[in-house]
Length: 144
Image 1 (cartoon, one colour):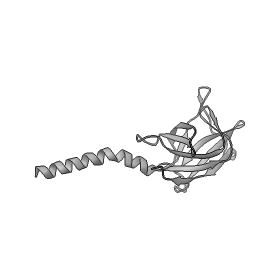
Image 2 (cartoon, one colour; image 1 turned 90 degrees about the horizontal axis):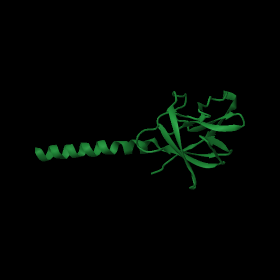
Image 3 (cartoon, rainbow, N blue to C red; image 1 turned 60 degrees about the vertical axis):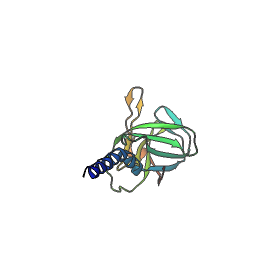
Image 4 (tube, rainbow, N blue to C red; image 1 turned 45 degrees about the vertical axis):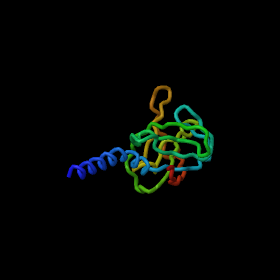
């Protein structure tokens, strides 16, 4: 009886400790070819192939944007967005503000969309108009 209880306790510990890692893997990643220069935080990134995934196992609020073939990485502080009509859509959304395109939304990493927070001159950057938005299709990829 004690041996069986110990086995169950050990299995429960393994399940609890492994759950955050399995959950993070389940969120997956998205890959997109971004055909124009764009801004994330205070950095201007060049056109190219990028991968966005969850940065770590603590939850989806911080995403990592990285160049597909090595190079730079940028962490993105995000908020959850309301659900949209097509939950299977995988898209990056950019707003043109002034003469720059800012990455503003990431759809397809996790269970919902994530809104990227931008602080410019100490203020949260306001969204551009719907007409100013450019959408880039992405695909789900495995990072494991």
